[in-house]
Structures are given as structure tokens and as C-alpha cells.
Picture (spheres, rainbow, N blue to C red):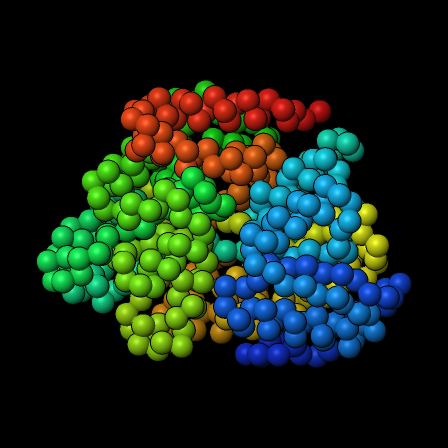
Length: 459
């Protein structure tokens, strides 16, 4: 673990252009044949086109063939689980947010160890992406890398700046600490409704019981802001017995459920899927949202007024105690299921994607919704921090250049089960729908967490 904390560095400068894969990236000749590859559909069409272009370039340079299937996020999740259960698996999978799938399957020895590939790039990859790719195998009784990280991303704030101004406020006056920052948007709701926007809500936090990911990310940041970042530590231990962690959870649940009960959150937020808050934001039904990636803004990139003038992307404020607040980062990348028929070609494609010029061109082709897992790329290519774009630089700084911590799923697969069961969303529902106090709802969620963690012991 200690070596994972080293700062990422790439030896030598990168010669990168705004688009395209340059200088004929290197490939090795694998055993040959066709490899079956699955990936999740991008939130913007450019992501899929960029991935297809990268695969085509790999085919041309390597002589190998790729049978590529791109499918919606939830459909891919279901197909992966079915494949790993039945043993009828593809050769390689790319997933932008695999944290509810990889930890448990690495634990159960259902994934290929790809440490040989990751170790060759350890000095280049971010420490957080490494922590998000390294899992414990309960059969081999050791940790290893089971994903080749290609991208990472934070959860920024998405704000309709024009609505803030219409309500008579200025984002320059927004408070600098977490709760106060959220509270800043509440009075805008009444003003905007008085101006005819009768369906508008101040904010759209994903307090969902449905998921799969956004509600968990929301609570992770509320916990960090309230001093509860240590609920799970790098040794894989759960710390629900820590009074500081319990207090952070109670404060977080109290704030979110109060905002809902006070009418600042759309009523349907309890059953939102990942895209529903995006849709509400695009329809100007909420002034502010806190959600993963730049997909919210990029979905409207062709509406130049909305993209360039009306919307704003903001990073994290300070924690409630006034200290700098790290962003919890999720990593996306490539993994190989056990039983894959063409591991050699799958690994060759992994190596191809890890080349900085390939990684950069692919993620730029996807309009920067995901940030390279090699930090030096965004430092060397000015496109990533181009100030003419009102959204991307802020997102990049939060995602890879600022303080970050890894998702807890890398520390213990039990947290993947906690997320999959939507324990935080159910905690909110217990308060809102079932009349429980935040204290009682948190204690109920903690008991379930403890039961889940009891099934995962490291030797």
C-alpha cells in the first residue's frame, strides 16, 4: 500500500495533439484471433465513437480483431453478473464505474490478475486509481490488481448560473463551507417560483433507494464534509463504532432528510435512477445538482448558450470544520473475467490503452467526461485546462489535480455490497417515509454494514 501513495509522474514529455492517436502507438503481437469486448454506453455519443476509433486503431496496428458490444450502463451490469455466474464470459470488459462489481468478484477469484500490466505503469498512474484497482482475493489470500485503470472522475456541483442571477443572487457570494454552500441555494426556490417557475426546486441530491451509484457518492461526500471519512480505512476495517463516524452519519442524514421534508428536493428523488437528476437539471426543475462527471453539461454542449453562459461547474467547498475537503474518486477501466478465451489479446488491448497518447486521445474524443488516470497527461496537454471551456478545467482540477481519496470498495469488497444494497438511501427513506429518527436510521444501517463486513475477513 505504501508504494501506492507515491505521486504519479511520467518520464519525459508527451507530444499530444487536440485529437487523434499519434505516432503509431506501440502494440505487441498477441496470440491472435478475435477477442470479445463489452463496454458501457457513454453518456454522450462521442464517447462511444472515441472507443470504437481506439479499438479500430488497435486492430490495424496489431492484426488482432475485436468483437465489440456497447450497451447501456444497467444492461451491462446485469449482463456481467449473469456472465460471471454462468461462466460464459467475454474476453475483456470496460466499465466506467465498476465498484459494485469488481470487489466481490475479485474476492471470489472470478477475475484475472492483471498486476503484470499495472505494475509496469505504477509510476505513471495516480495513487487513487491504483487504490481503486487493487482488491483482495479470498482464494489466493492476497491482494492484486484486477483492473487496469484508464480514467477517473469526481462529483462536481452543476449550477444554473442564470437562475441564480434571476433569483437575485451571485455565485461569488456562495459560502465556502459544505452545509452553508448547500443552504445558499434554498431561498432561491421561493423567489423563482414567485417569478413563474412553479415547479422549480432548489437542489436535486440523489437520496435514492434505487441507485446504483449517485446516492452512494452523495453520502460519501457528506460524510467527508462532516468528519466521517474514516468509516472504512485502508486496512479494510469498518469503524461504525467510532463516535465521530456515527455523529458524521447522523448529521449527514439529518441535513439531507430535512432538506427533503422542507420541500427543497423533488419528491421523486427517493426513487431516482442515475440519469433522473440529470434530466431534472436539464429541464431546469432544479437550480443545483451534485452528481458524478461532466455528463450533465456535455449532454447540452450543442446548446452553446446553455453550455458557455448559463451553466456553471463548481468544485468542492471546504468541509464543515473549514479544512480542505478531498474528492472521493471512482476509477474506470478494463478487466478480464476468469474463463476468457483470449486473454492474450485482451491483455494486449489493455497495454495499448495504457499508452499515454492513446489514453489521452480516447478520453479527449469522449469530450473529457472522464479524466486520464495518468495525471501528467492533463498537465502536458493544454486542452484539459483550457480556460475557454467553462466546465472542464474545474472538473479536471477536482478529479485529478486536487486532493483525492479512493472509494472504499478498494479497501474491502464489503463496501461494494453496502452500496449495492443502497443502505444510505434506505436510511433516508426510513426517516422520510417510516418516521424513524436519523439516529435510529443510522444505527439500523450500521448494524447491516457490520453484518456485511463480518462476512469478509482478511488473513
